Image 1 (cartoon, helix red, strand yellow):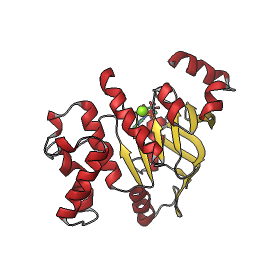
Image 2 (tube, rainbow, N blue to C red):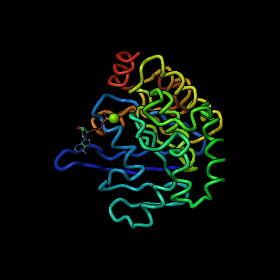
Image 3 (cartoon, rainbow, N blue to C red):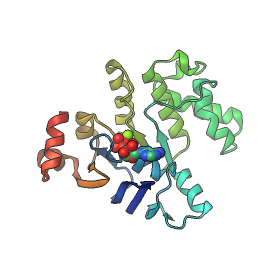
Image 4 (cartoon, rainbow, N blue to C red):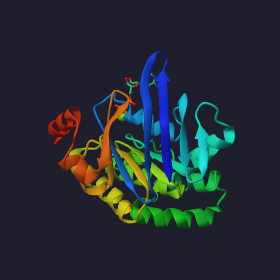
Amino acid sequence: MLKVTNLVKSFGALDVLKGISFEIKQGEVLAIIGPSGSGKSTLIRCLNYLEQPQQGIIEIDNARLDAAKPTKKDIQHLRSKTAMVFQNYNLYKNKTALENVTESLIVVKKTPKAEANKMGMQLLSEVGLEAKRDNYPVTMSGGQQQRVSIARALAQKPHVILFDEPTSSLDPELVQEVLHVIKKLAEQKITMIIVTHEMDFAREVADHIIFMADGHIVEQGPAKEFFANAQQERTKKFIRQIT
Ligand code: ADP
Ligand code: MG
């Protein structure tokens, strides 16, 4: 359902992604781990075309983008099939929780407001925040804001949700409420790619793990095997350090 072939991205002279290839199936959860600066954020930002890769093929549910010569339509397609959840939530500060969730429904999908609000409330209830519908971001905790941002991503009905370290801005006591929501989505077989440092979470929820370093995939495999039986010295060292 999502296949990436030989993705290459550089910023000027800095080669950040040096030929990344992987695929995931519908309903799977992929966790991307690796040291800071290894290119994890750049990779998932390329999948939503927030960054423009120079080379590589991204195929998602019958749509295909060739990064060497993408058309506007390819880019629109890719964006419509992916939704991002950012480390810092990136909510609209001047909109309520409900308005944040319904914005894309009303503006992009032209859903009538009453219907969008109904869908928005359903999504807020899925992340346990019906009661916060009229709250502005500044009046919510980081964990609540991140749950609104997950509801907003779900509203787009994307084929895959991309999470960039969704819990690393949160105070420790708020991490679990966000991980719990993501775990529930995994149980509903929502396809997700999650950059994370939460190894216990990755072990429990991900089907597949990719370990990146220096713009390469050093090692990848099914989660159970990956943690029990990493092959590369570099991977073993990383797992030891972080757990
Ligand atoms: P990670 O998410 O694994 O920590 P990033 O993808 O954020 O890594 O960054 C990988 C490398 O690319 C780093 O050296 C970073 O400084 C560089 N980089 C990321 N974004 C940009 C940018 N917009 N312009 C220049 N360099 C960037
Ligand atoms: Mg990052």
